[in-house]
Length: 155
Image (tube, rainbow, N blue to C red):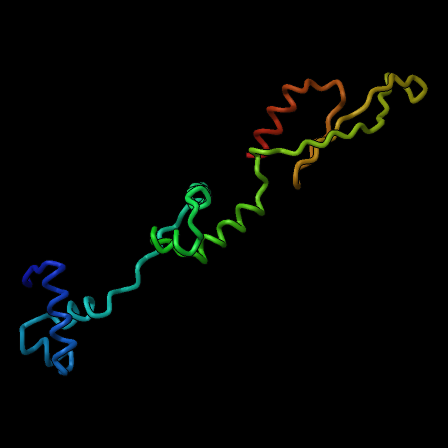
């Protein structure tokens, strides 16, 4: 098993290698350092980008907006990709925002027949359109139940 070194020790070894003028292989053989390990310190593997939920992005966008700093500076300070943040903001804007619904009620004439078309008891229906979601129900349908149904569908 190899020697355990601190981050600072590795930084010093990488600096020595870069200033040595030697090939990485010759430098490692001369000092008894594992070639692959030095290679990982000289050229660290790309960082794996954490996948963030839209709610996490929404929180970060709100934090940046309320910070008073411009997006580029805020992203640099917090180690966040400005491009990814902008893309997340576009995705969030394209979604239906249930926090600020825009209800549109349209009364559409409807006919309710008891036994035959001659016995019209009137009535109507209500159509609620929200983004791409549309619900139509008889006007006598309890609004509380319709609201619960709508809320669950929007989620």
